[in-house]
Length: 220
Image (cartoon, rainbow, N blue to C red; front, side):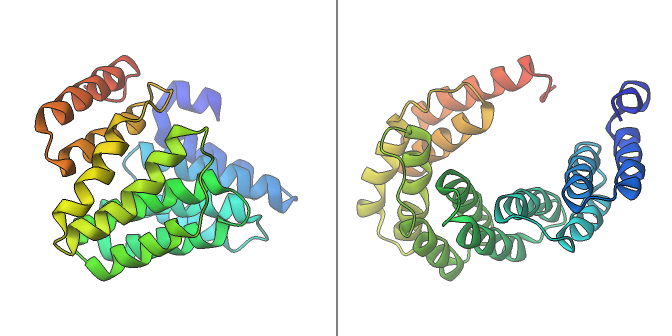
């Protein structure tokens, strides 16, 4: 798969990983390779193929954490097809299922579910996401988890028209230092600043995220 990626990019890598998965006798290894193949297909813009591969992997006997990774990957592909409401439901269910096993993953899925619910402009879906997020206790020493735990409840207040109550939660989220320069983490902070009404802070955070994404080759 590594050689295929070097020769033909992520699409070729996905094909090589699928062949490797077909040869795997162990479900765990087959799932791992299908997950990698789906990730490569998604990177190549092959979104239908991504969905198909995650569906294949989901038929196997998987641990909840692996299933949550599959849901996150599939949701990324589904969103490109404009299926925001369905994607929100998928992420919410995945967050609920993985919450007893991995709080960090549950909160990350909840954050993503909130954003897809916001794209769908569906306050009832956002409310369900907020309920899942409220059931997870973030690690107080992990500011990324704290940030992600704040977004869904703040978002529910905002979409129900209670801007005054949502703004302090969004401002608190935007001020958190998540301890990483990963673009996605700064995107979360930027969105919190944006929803709080601090457009200057949002622009600064988004500019930082974009610069880092360019360094990583993820943005032209």
